[in-house]
Length: 93
Image (cartoon, rainbow, N blue to C red):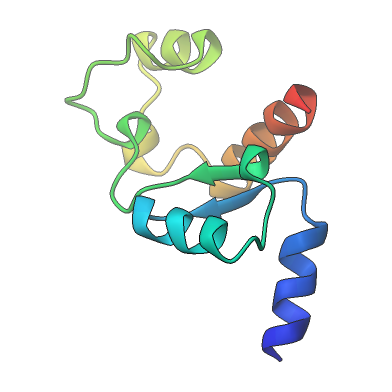
């Protein structure tokens, strides 16, 4: 099973990791190209916190929040967020 998971990770365009320690371990063993590693730390993203500053959000999402849209109330479906993130990542490669 571990071999199958590793093969999938090695075929992926982007591999998310949670901490810098995990990144270091992946690089130490030469498992994934460092350019394909993206850190996604544990916690709540700023766009899901109504009290957070939205200055560094994508313009479309920041504008929607400024107009009363509240992702923290469940108005943003997680699948939409994942599709948007995946689209941006594919465009950057």
